[in-house]
Structures are given as C-alpha cells and as structure tokens.
Amino acid sequence: MTVIVTDVHYRMSLAVLRDLHEAGHRLICCEREGISAPLGFSSTAADETVTLPAETWLDSLYHLCEQTTAADGEKPALLPVGADTLNTLAQPETRQRFAAVCGLWIPTAQQLDDFNSKAKVAELAQSLGLPVPAAHVQREGEAVTTFAARLPYPVVVKPLCGEKLGLSASQRYAIARDMASFVPIYERFRQLAGEPPLVQTYLPGGALGCSVLADHGKLVTAVCHRRIREYPVSGGPSACCDCIDAPQLVDMAAAMVEATQYTGLAMFEFKEDGGGKPHLLEVNPRVWGTYPLTRRSGSRMSLLWAILAHNEGNPDKPLPLPPIPKPQPCRMHFTASDLCSAVGYAKRGQWGRALGTVGDLLRPAVKDGLWEWGDVKPGLLYYRSLLRR
Image 1: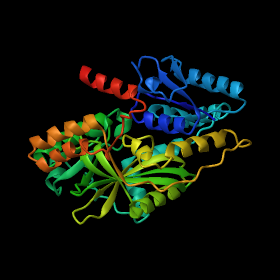
Image 2 (image 1 turned 120 degrees about the horizontal axis):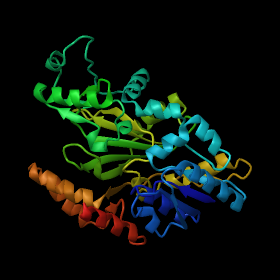
Image 3 (image 1 turned 120 degrees about the vertical axis):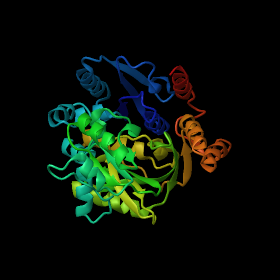
Image 4 (image 1 turned 90 degrees about the vertical axis):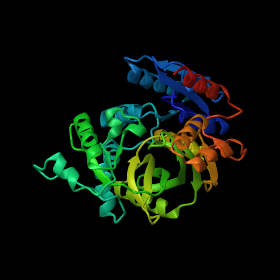
C-alpha cells in the first residue's frame, strides 16, 4: 500500500509516518512550498518527499495521486494531516474529483461544520442527554455590561469556531474571573469573529480527551487521556498526558459519532466539574495535538486509518484490518512544552506540578511525543527551530 501524507511540518504527522513505516507501507510525504524544513521530510519513515507549489498545491496533489495510481495499479491512501487540507478535500466537488485517484477516509463538509461549531456540539450533546457546561447568552438589546453583571464568574469565553479564525489552541478561549475582565474579552472575540462568542460556566476539574477513528457512525477504535500538565499553564494544549481507560468518555463520544454518522478522525474534549463529572466541551474533527499518544499507546490508529482509506479507494482490492489492540496505559509528554510548563507552574507557586516535570524527565517509562531514538532528525530539527524563535 502506498500512503500519501500531507502537511508533514506538523509534529503530530510523525506519529502517522512512523506507525505506517513500521507496518511496511510506502510513504510519500507532501508539504506546500514555502514551509522551511518540514519535519516529515527528515524522517527515516519517508520513502519519497514532494513539495507542492503554493499557488497550485491542490492540482499538484491531484496529479501526484494520479501518477501514483498509474504506477502502482491501485489508488494510494491520502491522509490529510492539516485542517486546511482536510477542509478543502471534504468539499463535495473536490472530494468527488479526488475519489478518482485516491482513497479518502475523512468527514463530510457538513460533519466538519457541525463538529467545528461549539454551539452545534453543545446543542447536539444536550439533545442526547450528555452533560455540557451551562451556557449564558446575551439577551437581545441587552448591554454587554448588563450581561456581564449577571454572569456566575468565573466563565469561559470562546468563539464558536476558533479554528476557522486561524487561532492557536491557547488563543481559542479565555477565562474571565470578573466583570472587568469579561467585557474586553467578550468584545474582542465578537469583533474578531463577527458574531457573539460562546460563554460557559467554568469547570474547575481535570481535562480529558477521547480520540476516535469512526466508520459511518461506528467507532473503530478509541484512545482516552487525562491531561497532567499544559502549556501555557494559563490554559493551553497538553504538555503531558496519561493514556487511561475511560468507558464513560468512549460512550459519550460514540453517541455523538452515531448521531452524526461521522467518518474519520476526531478528538472529543471534556472537562470535569468540582465533583469529577466530565462534561463535553468541544470536538476537534481532525488530527489533533496529542495524536502521538495513539502511537505511544499502541492503538494502531494510523494504520487503521490508512487501510480504511485504501479500501475506500480500492473496493476491489481491500486489505484486511489488523487486530485492534486495547490502548495500553502510558504517560506521554512533549519535552520542550513540558519544561516550559514547569517554569510556568513554578512562577505560580505550584511546585508540585513543576517538580513533576523534572521527575518525568528522569523516568524512562515516560514517552516523548516527538523524540524517538530510531528517528532522531525530526526531533533535532524541531528543537533547533525552537532555539531560533
């Protein structure tokens, strides 16, 4: 099987490449022109690297798939790692066009819109009886200051779809702890998005996630995690997380997947309330930041994704799905982010969490989400890029 993987400058693409390389499949790594030193290009997993012209990247990707089909006698599996590439390929006309030259296992454009919208996710979850944070809505004609005066602080403010605004994970929400901080946050997001942001009651508990691969409304496999540390510490993506067994999260994710007949990859984010009850916050219908945990836990999610894509494009030459293992409990961190989180926690006086980073750095059992001794060049490139910032 030949697999074409796009957007290999993202560090999470390495988990896809390494899993498929170990399974013995041929890998073509793609990146758009203008991206300096994509991590995937330096990986030992890459059999071929292709730079797509920035102006005509979509047509060039099509022709690459077309040429690969002609050479192999079967269509390659096309795995879009970046959200922009995924959104483009999901559009009906583009999807139909590419179906002639590759196999895709991705959501529909409507499914992406539904899961990218925090308001739609909350509405669907509530209709299914799933817990979500309480939402607070500005009444028609109500002044922002009046709205702010009746809120139960602290609250979380976030645009309905921060991904479409080009915001990083840590920029897609803000916590307002009083009226004075709420008003400028609310107005900033409203001006940025052109619509009122979502306002929800802040949940003080731990952060959880359920990462899934779905097949037309059914779960193929799922990996759950608990966030241990984050960076920025004021609210950001995971710097360290544990793979956990969490049937309750899987059941809630499965209900959302079934209701939408979802196909493809997605990560469901949850937050616990003060009593430890998880509430669904949002869905990331794409390859997400903690995706390397799917590799570190031995879930084989990338291999399953690629085979499903291959079979979609080659129904007359299907490959059998391998046995689907149960994800193994483990701890994973991103060393650079975790070190930065330690500094952040120390500045806040949270010495236990800061020292936890040091302890995990000294524990061989803790796995890195980027660095692997059998494929060191991507890690070296990544750390060099950090030093240049």
